[in-house]
Image (cartoon, rainbow, N blue to C red; front, top):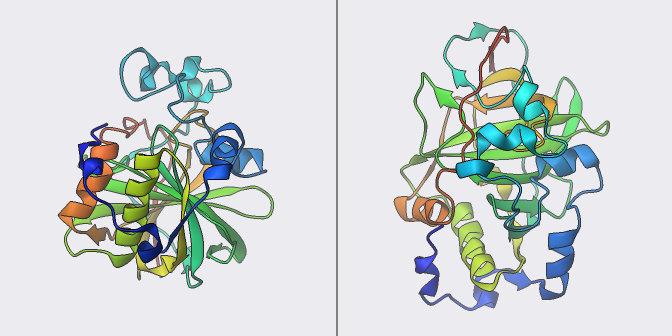
Length: 276
């Protein structure tokens, strides 16, 4: 991680719409961020700078299956991410995104990525008439999924769960282009969080700007892309990328670059193209 940029002056917290949660720092590091065990796994529920796995060396991806409880990383047959090449047209509906309600967002660095956790359950997606609540989102640089063997600069994973604990993850690629105002607020909070080694909260964030109209998704059955690599995760990878300014992307990649799991075999799985 390259954090030299954090030495620059940071605007007053009050002007950025953030609030500190110093008293919650240790609780954040020691406790799950969600009561549901399956969702906790999807949230990369690890202490900051977790020593058991990483993206390089003898704790890198090829050794993840040796981590306690993460055998699926080694023997699973429906692992993620994959290289999306051959797709099958489907009449099934694409996710209906209902990110319309502003919410406070907790921001913390878990040692593998930066995790953004909404404090309400108002932002959802609709799948087959079932409501999936946004539990958290985080990023990888470069992207984990590939399109035609090519990576995008980055990828955001939006992790959702329904009332039965089933997971649906929406992957949105990041492409350098126009700035994204909501990401600007969240990344300012990210700098503050990292500088202080503490959790901060971005107030009244409109998450709809992170998921604009995206008519086409690629759907397949996969897994979490970090230990324990649990399977039976429904993936919806957007064909349309989200743009952000180069300086915004630099903040993300300066913190974490190379936190992407290698491509996994697709096997006999079918990838469906869904359109609204």
